[in-house]
Image (tube, rainbow over all chains, first blue to last red; front, side):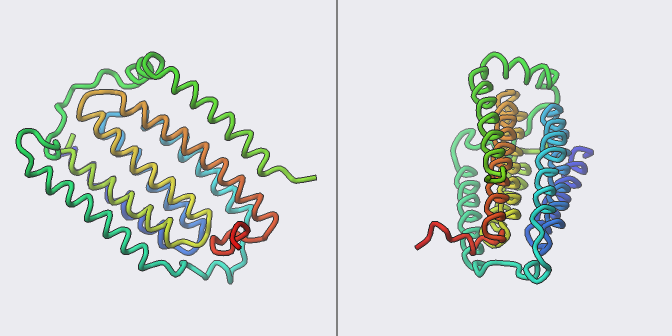
Length: 172
Length: 100
């Protein structure tokens, strides 16, 4: 019961502020609503007992990436007349793509409900105590089975850092 | 934990809102933010299945996706700043240097 209340609370905040983020004209308002969505998603992660991802989400997404976004929005100030222009003329494309994707997922759920045997476990829930202490388990998995991808990710971040510096540097 | 379908529907809703943002917005910064929203929706799926099967690998993949999102945001915003310096705009339909 409590699980349900927490889930619907955070899910409502996440979906509502994501919708507001897509529709607001001002980019700063969009960024604020995206922050609300990311924090609500962090709440969902905590409800799923993924404490480490919860902390990483708050520190890295909300504290790092979104601050970067807001910095760039402040650097790139458009005039007010430009802010009034809201959407490209692609509403119908967006509607068609969204309906197609929704139909695909609906079809997936509908067919897997009819599968014999287990099928897709859409109605099953995990038992309460199944995961070991979270940060410890993530660290063990990350530094044993996934050591090579971890190193590759560090190289990726280095390349991204150099790329961002080169891109944003003033050409002399 | 609730049945996995709840999380799948939440993730689908966020993903579709992100797709709508990518297609309809003109401001490139908001398009990048919509991409972050899409990546976040994927993370919900990964963590929910990790909980369902009691396997921590899903959370490790969510970490990698967060690292990817950080790299993408850094490079994308660097490109936007360089472009703004040259053309004084961040609107997607005025970015036509490669079109002829």
